[in-house]
Figure 1 (cartoon, rainbow, N blue to C red):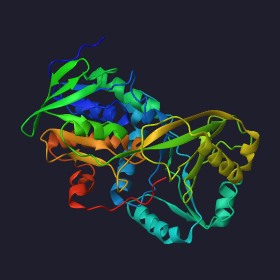
Figure 2: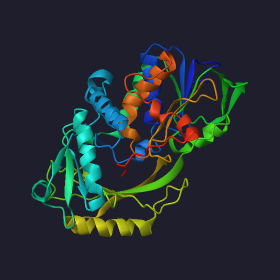
Figure 3: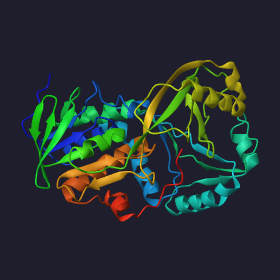
Length: 386
């Protein structure tokens, strides 16, 4: 077993996509002594490994669109750069609108995305029906479509960053829980773990839904709530075309995409309270699957292949918390992505490396996502949350 170093230039806590990407990009930028700590037995086993794998440009906030542009570009170069396949599939996202109140907002979203260079299209009912003949579009008023949205493999992303980080000298320790953070005044000096302490001036909180627990160790209130979300995969659906897109009914948060020969489907429960329970709520699964079969009748002949639950890490404005926390020198956060963290994992790690090594993230301006916005009350929520 790898020993815990006595010191490090930076300690990244959390071994999901955010932590693995941050560790890799710090090492790739030249930081010599980086330690990544994950309390589970393997990287990416919690929220990253439990997500649907969607990637999209279709957001309502300029910063999120820019993050997606950069992140998906990085995914396209991922295999060449890191030698790890991502199973990248730009099958497109089709977001279906059933509420009049959403139409004006989404018209504005399309204008924003197109201004930033994303070729999002506005579709009327005939075009929608032609694109997804297997889906019942009763009540659908319009849709937005982007053919550069799609899917990628969360496990492949974590493995790729993990292996590349290790090859660049990052010390990666699984089964290692952080139990405390030491400070002198407002300056971080060390991280305490279940295997001893490591002296460091920099701690990166990449703990996702568990980020508030790490923040509490150093007196930082991190307003993230863990919210359970559930997924189902089905047995093969022979009628499903190979080019079936990622389909979202926006107002009900029901979605489908192809998974192997079958379908992966999810539906957010807007009444779900916060908590760390990731057991499957069978009553909610029944509600979900009844609606899924109503919207996609071919699922009536399919069986359930697997089901599971994971956690969204939700902030009050559905935006991540990103960058240095001003009240504690050396404490950084990259968490709270509110259901769209996997897709922004590549660029988030690069930006965190810039934040630590250059003093400020610069590939994308993420100043609006800093922790201090909650103190100042400057919240501008993301609308396109699924």
